Length: 529
Image (cartoon, rainbow, N blue to C red; front, side, top):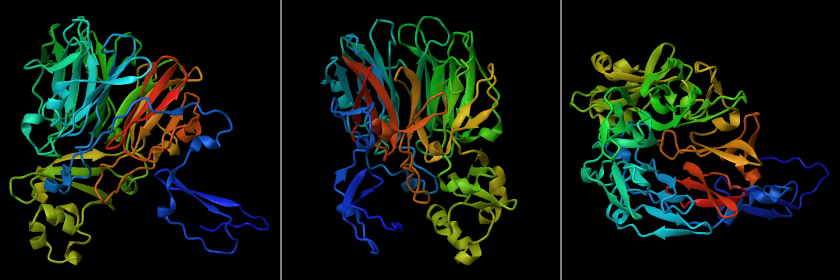
């Protein structure tokens, strides 16, 4: 980097590294080269010092919890998959468990580490002793929600399970914990046995029969990334026993789901974010869910879904977090990016191959060596890299295997929202460039200065080394007027890791914002009620 000073002088240079560490170079000389090394950065930069006014958020030490990932490697058995699906946590559930008027917090953990329940006294958080959570430490906790499953007046807990570190199937199914006087015990035979990699749980009495029902969104089969999987709605019999609603059907790869009323009829509808597919909008009419048409042009890698009145017209638009435009996929997205799922080497094991289009032909994304690491036949079919180069996908594998494979696409990587035009959701409006810098994984609606706003977070450490980590989304707050503010200007440190989400709870005299990353400690900030 070159800085032209003219006749001016500089007393110091502050260097802020992507992870928030910084250093100061004092009295740098003009007309000289300065070597800057990360090892000299030892302190965390306080962005609030740049604000002339008091920051809205202040660092807080109300709670201590660290999510610690396990050592499971998605790429060991499935070397051609584009990203991991085993690092979806930590699960977070918020609700008033002890009925003292303040919401408590459950944090799930990765396989091998126990989740934890923190009770909110109004002035502090106290960890609750829950032996069942310790016993169930081998489970991978992807998502969680508090709700009254059995209509007894207290909150029970549903935890969505992911991939066990050792692939022990005894620890790869969802769990329902019943609350008895503040102690949680895992229920037996009350919910669907779901051995899939569950990404999302959403609760709502969608059939208006007086009890809470469950949507469970599944992302993948733990044994095979490429297969699309079924998700389900579980109907509550009123006593906490659940059965599958056979009138509902969805086969896709679900990342997130939420119940919200988007047609202003007083009944919540089901909104779903999917990968390699379109987002799903199911309008709830008297307990019947009717899927709305969404153009195939909106097939994406949708990470999260929520609602907010983006245009100030009084109705709820549908917010959608995608991978963004700052990815290696971006240069190919003018044409659909395809993944083929089939047996390409004749060993009766299916693989997922990703291909991109150039001049009307599709080419494999992976190199010869990468393909050969999964399919030994590649080294026989193409002895040299020159023979492999510029070969379309049909020549790399075979025409027959491609024709027999299932095919999924992505056609858009931008994050944005579906505009609500009197219940029509055919118009997609992309967010501004700042919000395209990385995958968006969470929208959190907050009230700041008496105005409703949305805190946007995300990033991803899931992709392969072909992509690398996507960690450029530092966090932003947006409103319905089009204003976007970077979180450092509000007193929040920039997000430099994969963020599961941000959440807020009330305490006496203040609110607490929780920034919940994957494989890192939770950060807390206080802000005014």
